[in-house]
Length: 368
Image (cartoon, rainbow, N blue to C red; front, side, top):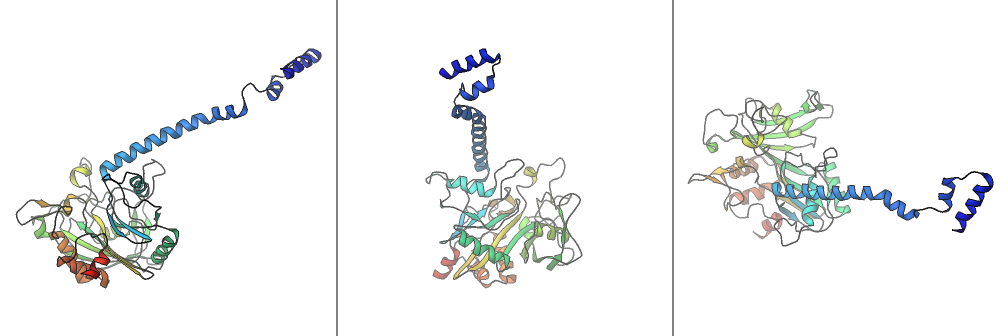
């Protein structure tokens, strides 16, 4: 009050009154309260974003469900990634990625079906395409993450993928696909004839005519099983390789064709295909003294199921014996795999010695 009186006397004397000056000497609202008022809209926005994020995660959990844990050691996790989700959050749409989804599942109460068993920090060490399912490695600590990243960099990680195509091989049934990769005008990738820094893929095929129950030409039916052994790790490498072989992968929205291998105008992808039929099935790496060998049969999508001897379909989630598709996959692995550890796992699986998709297949193999 004394300050206001002093300012009034100055105004009478000079004939002027500076309101800004008065506010500076005697602010009507304390500075900390003004700060809170300025931040409150942002706080409201954050609250709305958090609510929307939770809704997105809840909706995602209804579609994807729990994430199976395939392998766990002191520093390493291996999970079975579902198709239809990117590795990282989408910066444009804000859609959550797979790492965020895992962390969401970690936050769930342990007793719930969605809960992810490991609750500690996770590090992403490699990626799978949004369309691809299968084995994905996660590290529990920075040192393990560094070691795994070094293994991928030095190309000492052995990986095998399986895919289904609605076409039959018109040229080679096995061999190599080599070539540089470049962006096309549509933004997808294409294989070039040059080989200055080539993408390298070994492939093998097996016919599936008897398993599909029809010998008629039908692009919507799986006719060929493709086994891929990538020697490099480029974006969309296997999908581009399949297209170059004339064996586009069923359900592929970018590298399929108009005869049924990809959703076409007027046909919903959910009506024809539940997914792109590419799956990371086998992986082996030496992590110091730890020899990590993981086999994961493809459990996603109705086309992976097969007819039983009694008719109808068997789901890989409920079967006790390998399905005919799985036998076909493991037979082609045993015949062509260049990794003894993975060959052993597939051989034992065929014999029914070890349980399919066992969380710690390496240890199980030793005991058997």
